Image (cartoon, rainbow, N blue to C red):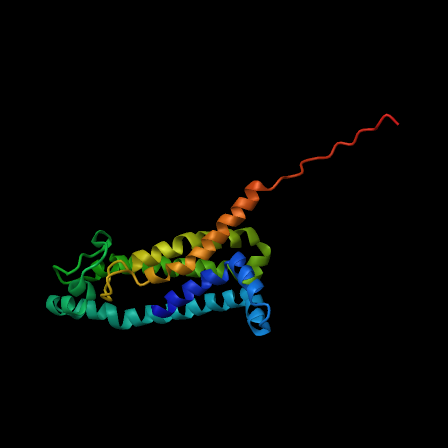
Length: 213
């Protein structure tokens, strides 16, 4: 989970073209740093693939450990294990199921819990993004590729916040919260691009008239 959070922050940072360009201007005296910054696109693609690998490991670990443990453990043991039962949460209204648990989880209860539902949505979103990022698809349908990435940029952080809202780790806040600082340069970059588009003059036609001479 921590690897996914770190990679998510770096993914958004590497997509912040204006930030990377501004930083590159100040480090031109260090060629090795410039080489890394110029490989922003390749780094972004590598981090995206890394998130897919970490997500797969994350899901397998939950399926092999967390889910069987929730279904097999008794209520007292589960509440003793869950961090939210010991330390509380920042926003309890987002917790599904409520913590501490009042009844032993069932298979349906686990599948309908906030971490599982948002986890499945995150995997689906990750799969869609990976499919649209394939070179063959990106070349043929670039507008769809761009729209998918913009959709992911808006939904991914929200789903991560909801995914960690049950606070089963016991840190009090969703794990993604400290990494939201990496999102700021990306959204500033988006706002600057939209501002340039809205302020751009568009040439719609040219009319040529004969002069007196």
